Every structure is written in C-alpha cells, then in structure tokens.
Image 1 (cartoon, one colour):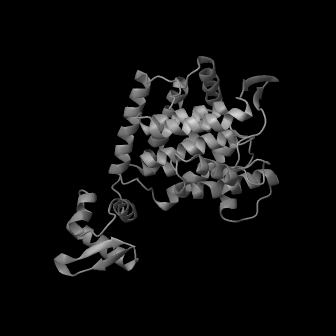
Image 2 (cartoon, rainbow, N blue to C red):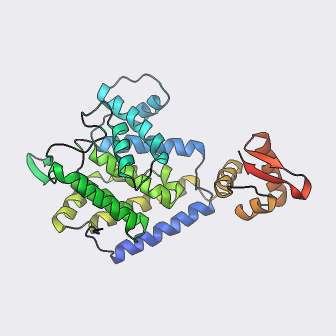
Image 3 (tube, helix red, strand yellow):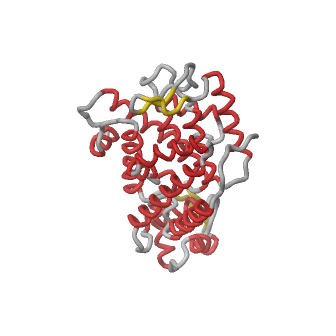
Length: 319
C-alpha cells in the first residue's frame, strides 16, 4: 500500500480539531440526522451546487421542481444530470466507501445516458484544458485501474483520520481522472460517502455549496497541488469548506433546545435494541421524566416503536 504524498500541517490539525468540535456541537443539538425540511433543503443545494460547478444551468427552484416530479423547461442534458444526481444521492448510503465496484456503480447512476462509458473507467487519454492550453494531462488509460486500486487500498489500510483521507481521495481521484466525464462530481460525492461513515450528519451537509462559493480557489488549489506534487494545500482547502458547512448547519439549527422530532430522530439513531425510559433519558440528556414519557407515548402512537412489558418493565424498540 502506497500512501499518496501529503503532509499533516499545523493548519490541517487546527482545522481538524475545529471540525471535531463542531461535530460534537451537532451531537449536542441532536443534529446527527437533521429534521426532514433541513435535510431536503441541504440535499437540493448540494445537487445544484455540485452540478453548477460542472456547468449545469439549472437553479435551485428548478432542481426542487424536478425532485417534486414537476415539469421543467430547460436543456434535456441538464435535466438528466439532475435526475441522475437525485438517484445517486438516494443510493449513496447503500454503497461501501472502500469498494471500487460500488464506486463504478455510482458513476453508472450519475452519468447514465450522458456518456458512453458510464460506470466504467475510461478507455482513452484525457486532459484538462483551460484558455486553450492543457493544464493537466491525466495518466494513460491502461494505468487507471491499477492507480485506483492503490488509492482504495490507501483508503482501507491507512491509519490517518477518515476526514483527512476523504480529502486525499478527492484530490488523488481528480489527478487520476479515471472517467471519460463526471470526475469532479464523483470526487465530491465519494468524499461525502467516506465522511458519512465518520459521522451521519455528513450525508446532509452541503459541502458542495461552500466549494461552489469558492470555485475559483477550488480549481487553483487543485492546480497548486499538481505543481507541488502533493495534496496538502487541497486538504487545507476542503477542510476549511467542511468547517464552513458545519458552521452553517449549526447556525440554521440555532441554539434552541431540540424539539420532539429532533429528539426522536437522534435517540432512535443511538438506541439499536430494546430500551427503557431510563435509556432514553441517558441519550436525551437534560430531559424531564414527564417529557420522556410523553415522547415515548407519541412514538407508540406514530408506530415509531414497538412495546414489550408493562410498568417499570416496559421496553421499547425501533420499528
């Protein structure tokens, strides 16, 4: 297993520490799985921003309409990109972040009907053009399967924090440029998949929005990393965008106490087996016993949990 070249700088350590601090705040506010409205809004922003980086012309309201199965007047190619992206993000949680097979499967969903080699590594040479000049010539096509296999081995076997490895994977994948098209969106969505195993909040964290807002710098740090022969500056850039996104979701949630829906989403994500009211209170710290009892009764009415026993022996389990 060859480790890609990068350094863990003081800036990276500082950003990593702040990100973990914000993740702790998300847990404290029970934002492990944000409420449905916030999840939907962030997913729409993620899809729109990631595709806009690649030149898609659809705006937020048009992406929303497509998600709601409404008719949109726009280029067919752009509509199909959005439809594919919706399917890809819906499928994301079912995929193994360390599996190259699942990686190719996701590309097949994301680029279906858009390129000939959807779901397969490219068979031809590619380069990145800017202002009429080749800015990056990717490795020859026959080298791609081996390079990607090495990259997935790094992801599985290296002991560095997953948050940092997700940034490294993102950069190295862009450098290898393994696909005929869709490399940028695949780098961003697969980083999200890696991060989801680190903390569930990443599934709905719109990091792509922060990247889109800093698009020129995004391309510049990719170029700088190429020139330096290591991904250090790119890691620093992406960690900064992750931190911005976490700050944003915390600001959206505000500092108010979690309401019933947020408490239940959080508690049921933590309680995998039979639990009692005491266990519920241990997860939802600071809650009164009366509120906990009301929560549990409402969960029964909503068929969120099944019940066993009576009185002090009452136990609950997620349905």
